[in-house]
Length: 177
Image (cartoon, rainbow, N blue to C red; front, side, top):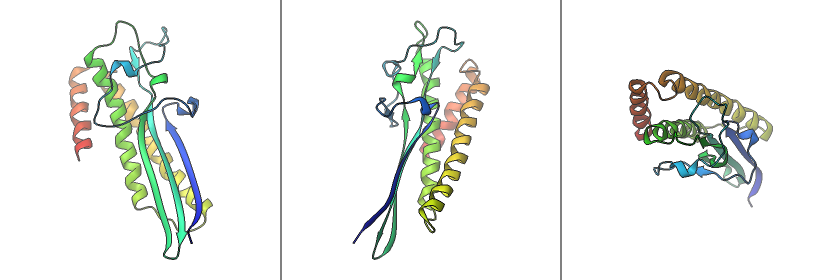
């Protein structure tokens, strides 16, 4: 007999707390973003030309059977079209590549979280498991935010073409690994 102990879904990322459950999400794949994916209205007072809202989501469950606990999980990075925007007249391939890298960084952190869950210790109570998983998530999410900020700072939001090229090569290499 299999008992379902717990299933929990988390939605995190760039201001995802504002996102509604019914918000459209695009999940990361090798297919790249297009400007048609940026559906939100930009704030004219915002100094930037575009903004990408991305993050990662996960679900997990623990089932008990005669062989013990079975832990399963699913991790996906996502992009929120209804919160992402580009200003009129500013859409160009170079800027889109910069925004795509923000999404790619979220994917890398999702993979890091997935790797952490693949060796996750499921001993103890559900409460203890949730607490340990929350700590791992918070660490990786904090790293994701720091990487996103470092990326924008070093590339000057894509204006430093040499730095943008270095970041692009770095992220593409990490995605290939």
